[in-house]
Length: 79
Image (cartoon, rainbow, N blue to C red):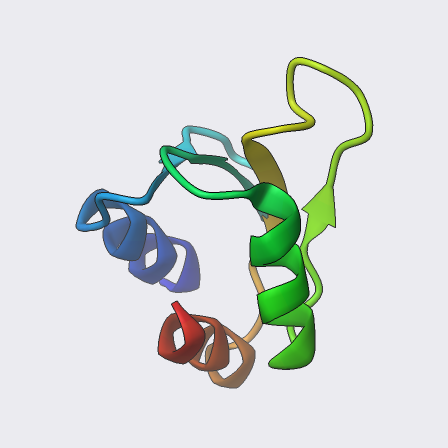
């Protein structure tokens, strides 16, 4: 259920898209903006995203864990 809620969030977004997968995380591609600024923003809000240090993922992708309802609600609130 939490995966579906997060996927729906990104489906409605003009800023990012989540790529299909089955693991307990989502790989997200930013359509606009800076992934490091996104990382910093969410970190200040208490959410840790995983960024990548090498191309081609470095500039536009981050990975996020699918957490429990409370933690995912915090991500949606910040998004």
